Image (tube, rainbow over all chains, first blue to last red):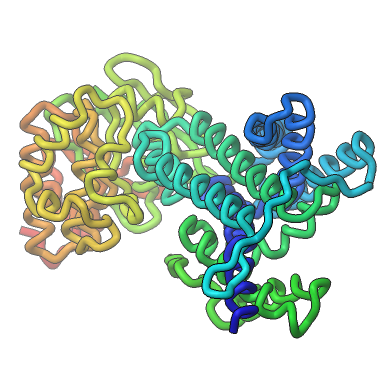
Length: 288
Length: 234
């Protein structure tokens, strides 16, 4: 029972990280209308940015903010240079281009930093026990940062004029335009938020495990699974689905092993697509 | 004042509009009627800037807005109520109004519109997707009126409404024109629409086949037989 609760807690932390990545995917899908396969590598870029920032400033917080800025900036650049020129083409064009962006980011990171794993220099903190359950203080910090990030995104989306405009564009892009909403500021804000959120996910993942050029790419499937399970384009759904997937992965680890736990995401994705394609919170699209 | 001159255009390579000339003056209701596929909704889209390919000229208060982007046209005083998908379903009723750009003193304007449309005011915190067809139409009107537009384009505003709600809708359109707004009304319920209009135009195959004062069109036998439905002809 104790180990079950420990796996559950670990799963919630991992799930929140998956949820952040899923949120980035679903935000882009909801507004820019394509699945961004560069999300995973934006995570990695954010993690490397944070590593470099930390070694330059000596502060984990400052490093994290630099990583976050790197993620936001790279996403905006990808939008300006690649996705905006393709915005009037089919979503498949943008999806394929995003795979290209992903490979490009990974290749650059590989050339600059090499392929050895890197770690964040963090203080080793002894786990404490609560009713016999071993709790990692760092996991609590990671969960706290993830929840804070999610809260900030939801504040922006629901309590600010630009967030309202973003939700309007996601809901009905043509009606948004005839309501006077200019697409450009909305798209820049979207990509900044999507990049920053992915970067936070990458930084937390890097702090929880290790950083390598491939670490974000490996998270892409769980992130897509979270976006689909949550109901594509539904931010709350993506986060909750991320937690569900994270918990399912951790609880399955004793049975399938660490290496194959990612297959759980694939299973979830497959089951959702077969049984409930609109996901947990998605709506049925009208057909006319 | 809205002036449309020799408007030609469509979505792909084929022209749907093949040469439209129309004018709507302040305080005037111009009903555009016609058979399905005549190009009425395409004309509405051209005026608000949603038609991807077009030639000719559109003037708003003597300014050429033919090449002005959609959102700029909205800010310069053209309101639009599309036939379908005319509210932001996932936003609350209040947010549907708050999100409109270019509104001076939006809080006051929202309060005014809630007075004008009390049915939606009661549910201001609810999501727009939860509204009935008639309430949605009211919200769509309110959203389009947020900027106090000089010209409003209504694309079949009564299409999904019951006869009682449609009557109510026509009454509101009449009131709107009396405030000085120019109304371009695309309507299938042509007789009812013409009854509240100053002038009418009947489209056929992308062109204006007949036009003139609304009462003359209602009395015109050819118009009645071809486009307005003989069953109700007076």
